[in-house]
Length: 316
Ligand code: UDP
Ligand code: MG
Image (cartoon, rainbow, N blue to C red; front, side, top):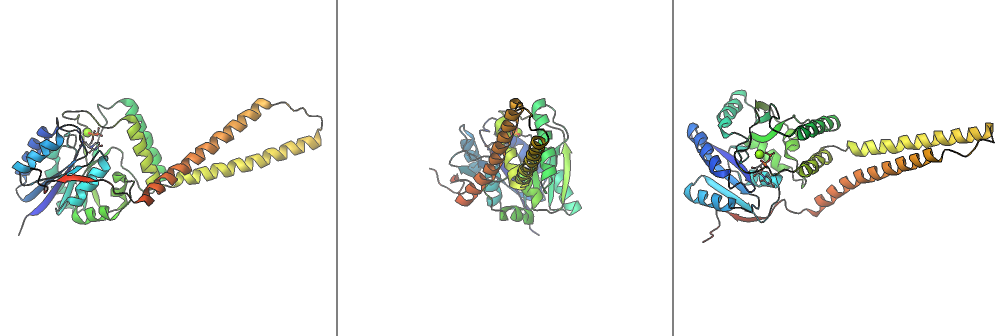
């Protein structure tokens, strides 16, 4: 019987410092799993350092290495998608290049997948040790809100480090939305998943590519992609204000009838109400705008990324 093939997908953006360490670790894992064949797909996400050269050289030396290089930086989501699309394996695993997703966990993940007969083995961080407290706080809020308002339930601390069977990969690829939020997509497609928890590990070299603002935009992406609750909430607020204004009008009319001499006064509170309602309206329009902008991007049907080079291209 021929060996099953595992595709290792590694999104890389400016990872020249981390990649040499990653190669060593991955080789160790591959050697420890002789019962499987491997291919490693490095997705160079428009890196500005020598990532592409390193990957290109690696592909020359090692026949199991393949790569896809983007024409510019398209983001990790596009990188993971490109990797999954080009994966030929019976199984696919996505892992970061910075060794924060330890490759040494792969044998355990594979064993669990086979033993429990599941389609996916995912990982989560047990703690957020080594992360700024503000970031952990916002992450907690984010998971709280998302899990309340959307049908898709996200596991707090879930990483993108995940081993999947071919049928799950095909299911993930069958979702052709432009605004991709993979953690949500993995949950949405279903299939049985086993979770492995591990301690947070600091990246081996280089810097994180996520700014606070970047993470904030990414979380909005998730909420808009997997829930329409904000639209319902803004409609509800509008309705609530409408009822309130009718009650207010009635109170004023009745008071006028009972006591026609009542003074005008209370302009400060009036201004407060105007500001409040105005603010609320802007907020609701903003919410609407978020959905509209996502719909606009979807209707453009732009490709998720542009490939500039792969290992099949002859560069010399
Ligand atoms: N990454 C990418 N494109 C980007 C940003 C990041 O391909 O635009 C890759 C990066 O090279 C790494 C992985 O995604 O392999 C995770 O990035 P990072 O370590 O910066 O995120 P963190 O672990 O801090 O969440
Ligand atoms: Mg990292």
